[in-house]
Image 1 (cartoon, rainbow, N blue to C red):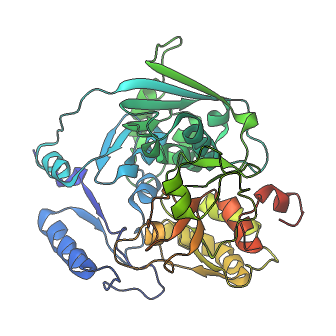
Image 2: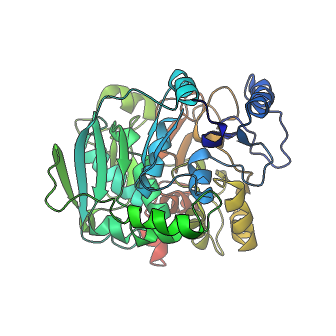
Length: 412
């Protein structure tokens, strides 16, 4: 049965992120989409986080902020990166618009049971290495189809050590691994994050829910259809070299000798070429992968007293209006602006191009986004995906750079 209280609508993909925005967008048909969604949500009694709502933002950022996602819940959205929210021990996955219509009308969906996979990250990450590097390492070693047909549990010492925002980054790119979803067993960090959030249980219901959530973990000795183990201590800062997230290497590596001609021809690199030092035209921090407050804190700390290299277009788009407000309260926006970054309103922005705003045609961008497909960020734009730290280091150097050099006080 249709139940509006279980449905939320968000304006994120097509919203303009430039300061002073309105319903008008650069995307063809965007304004009509916004106004029609607003009218439809009102008619159906569905809560809408509208363009200038104080809680507006990217759906996978605001849902955790508001406590909409909870451990053990089933959560769907017509966006492939819904698996981000598996970081809370939820079964979260992306669906199509027809499936969304069916789910809203009936509260049900037919789903083929996925196989199970556990990806265990042993040991601890080194300084300057991030959750983004963890998932890119998995993709580089096991391919973009490595998780196909599986629900993937991320575990191990390195995962347990991550804060909730880092766990969201890790689960976010389970979709690039072709997994049905990615998730992490909830623990005390999860419960502490959710307590007091607007849509989370409260009072007696909180304690009842907590008693249930504390049992949501794999049994000792549980058997999985497939297991992968990665030593987190061996992971280095990663950056993509091609047109698929699996085409990724460590910052000190070279483009593989067996790299295919099509991605090389598009990206404009050569076999055996060092990735470090490749000149860039632009830098982007944003998207549902890396636009949370902790991402912006780490990135901005590297900008203090420094300037973006001449000729580099640098943009920072907070993942939600709340993130933007909290960042501004801490002076993070000042650090970005003083360094030469544009500071934007929240939204998906230039994570993808669909006829709206984009980077200059043919430009080379280093980006915190999750996809580096051809023309993903604009016509013939060459995208290198990396962590916020590497994006900052590269923006300052004017070329792909190792963030550890900056963290160690050395020139990049």
